[in-house]
Structures are given as structure tokens and as C-alpha cells.
Length: 475
Image (cartoon, rainbow, N blue to C red):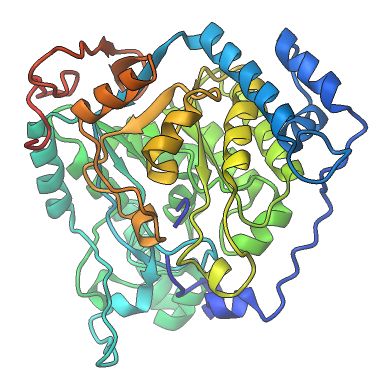
């Protein structure tokens, strides 16, 4: 789960404290050293020549010949990216009317960058918290998810996004549940949990149902369902020999429309081994994404940066996303850079990092993403991560999408994010118009677009299945 949640259970019984250690080893094989020059890399970017990893490193560092970021060189990179953005997508800035409905914070993976999830055992029926401890997490039943989404659809949303913790009771569907329960019967509850991180729903105060049940519940009145990250897909196939294609085929039949490319973090295993050793590896993430595209699902892609990685890792990540886009025949509609919010995460608490990315790094990451990813049209600026002022600035550095309305946003907020959790259509029109750009309401896949007239009243969404222009919330 990107940019987010607490300490807690991980496979094998480890926890975030143990994973962090007293002196984490963050020395890497991949370092930002190249045989390229900054000027050559920038000339290639300006001329539209496909960039190499070394080119990206030079642009991200503003030259490896000197330490630190050269502000004058940085501005030249940003200018090149803004020109490229204008050539590719013009002056429109898009946004989507959406709801975040994260199903559960219960999780079995102790990612050190995460403060969204809660230790899974704290959700068990017989768990007794200390008197001075409040367990703030949640789990929603499929019926509760349906009610939440149905209400938001009535208010005009186009899309529901759902990214959740890896609850031990989650199974893909009834067939998967039977296989997992058979493993419990054969090996015993504790052995099955160690092998599969599975416990029966009866062990928990609230049953999350199955992934298929949750997707079906959220698929209300034709709303677009954007869910099931590669990490969740891996959780949905544990204990079986089912392929990722089989997992995503069943989910698509249940109502899944597109797959968020979160859980990518940095697609270099030496980084993943530090920040999320319990997660799927780079190849597992790529395999799941290809499988989702193979069964006809659209994709997005992300990068969560600004923690322990180097510019070399960021460049390698961009290369792996670009190569993936070639293999999935353009199924990735947008690239979403996510600046690490460090404040209440184990990486920060254990002294592995002292902060997140600088604003200079944020701007360069957006710019180089635009210049490097020549086969992905849309680059997103996250107002949740950057704030309004920073988010607007990123729209002049190569980004062209400004996220969604996000009626509920728990992940960044629980990691210490400061920039709120809702954006109205009126807010979007005012902010986007303030920098001389054109506000455009879009569908998830960018195929449907509506240019919003700033003088229109009322200012509400119109693309959702029940949208009629009424504001999502009262102003």
C-alpha cells in the first residue's frame, strides 16, 4: 500500500521492529554513476530521442559530476518536460470524480514505509488490547462496502478505488476458501497461518468476505471499479497453483474494471529487501500486471520514492515501467509518482530515513517521468502528497492529471499527510484555471472527457452513472 501504515504481523511472525534492526544495511549495488553527461542527456530529451537509464540518472541528479541538485540545470529539465507535456496532451488538466473505499487495515505484511495497516491479530475476536491502547483500524463487510459505494454513486462519482491491507481471512472466492480451510484442517491453524497467513473468518470480529464478494459489492450501477493491486492478487492466490491470469479473470467476472499499479514502490529488489521484505518481488509485480492486461483489464503504474532508494533505482524503475508498457500493448493509462510521506512510518521511527524527498526531487521526478515514459501519455500530480501549491507546480513540470475527488482517503492521512482528503469539482476548476490550464473531468481510462466551463453552475460531476452536475458535497 503506497505511501502508508504501522507495525504489525508479517509472514513468519516477524514484525517491523525486527525487520528494521538496529543498523539497517542500506548499501546498494546500483549507484547513481554514469558514463553519460548531463548536457547530452538533456539534448536527447529535448530532441525526443528515447532516453536510457544513464540519461535518466543524469537528469534526476542534474549531473553526476557534482553533488547536490543544480537549480539552474533543474529548471532546464523542467522546461523540457513541460514542452513535452504540451506536445503530448496539450493544455488540459484532467481529474476523475471518485471515492476511495479501502476495505480493511488488517495486514500481514510489515512494510517499513507503511502506517496505514494494523497488526492483523488485533482484529481477532479474543484480542485484548491494553487499557491505554486504542486500535483505530477497520474492516468492512461486503454489505458495508456496497452501501458506501451506492451512496457515492448517487452523489455522482465515476470510479471507486479500493486498496486494502492483506487480511488473513481474505480468500479469492468460495473455492479458494475451501482450499485454505482444508490446509487449516490438515496442518492446524497456527501452521496454516505461518505457511499461508490464513485464518478462518470465525477468528475475527468482522468478516471481510472474499475478494470476489467485495468487488461484486462495489460494482454498483455501472460504477468503474479500480482495485486489486498485484500484492492483493498474490494474496488471493496463496496456497494454490492458480496463475495471476486466473485470479484476474475471476475478479473481472465479478466486476473489476482496472488494476491500480500500486505495491510497485521501487521495482528493484535490493530496495524492496529493505523497505518491504515481505512483499512480492519485482518480477512478481510485473507478472501480475501482465496477467491483468492479458485478461483485458486496464492498468495504472506508480512509483513510491523518496526513502532509501537512489536516483539509479528511480531510473531503473522507470525503465521497467516503460518496458512493461511495451509488453502490455499500451494498457497502462497513467503513471503516478508518489512522494514518500515519512512522518509516522517505521522507516522514520527506526532512523532508517530522516525525511522524504525534497521539493527539487519531486519536481525532477515528475519531469523525468514525462521525458522517459514516451509510451505513457499521462503523468499524475498528487495533491494529497504535494498539497495544492506543490501539486499545481508539478503541473508545470510535466504532469497533466490532478488525481480525483477522493471522498475518503485514509492511507496518506495515517502516514502523517497534511493535505486533506477531499477535492470538489469547484476546487478543481478554481485551481486548474489559476495556472491558465483547462479543467477536464475524465473517466478512469481517459476515453471520456468533459471540459468544465468555469462559469457553469452548479459545478459537479457529469460523467458518473448517476451524475447530473450536482456537487458531490454541499459547498
